[in-house]
Length: 125
Image 1 (cartoon, rainbow, N blue to C red):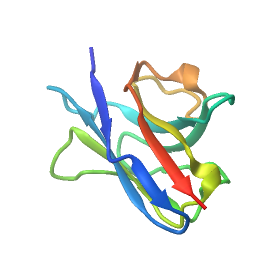
Image 2 (image 1 turned 90 degrees about the horizontal axis):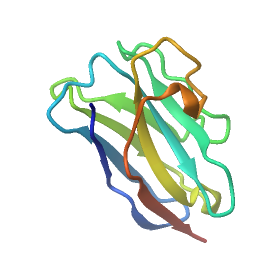
Image 3 (image 1 turned 180 degrees about the vertical axis):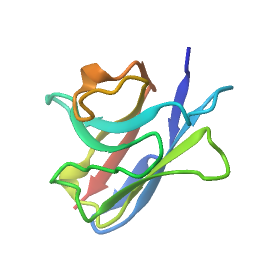
């Protein structure tokens, strides 16, 4: 069992930045591929970014490409980050991190085995 806890959300003005963290309790994330998803009110959960086991592959949704960066903490194998720059009001959502052990479709939420509780990101115009 992997317990994931997100942090770093908050209220920010358009154009600002936030860094989200996803921490695993008591277990290394080095054996898991990780993903970030988000869900805005009234909308379905959508893929944001993913990172492979090695960190060598980092695909992004087109809507965040060039603005968001996903990374693993090289020293702490229990933390994954999502750096969000040039935030827009349409980025407002609850952001979730997720972990998967299987080789599967990285952008599908059903591919992931474990989920955090989410952290709210609100971008004001």
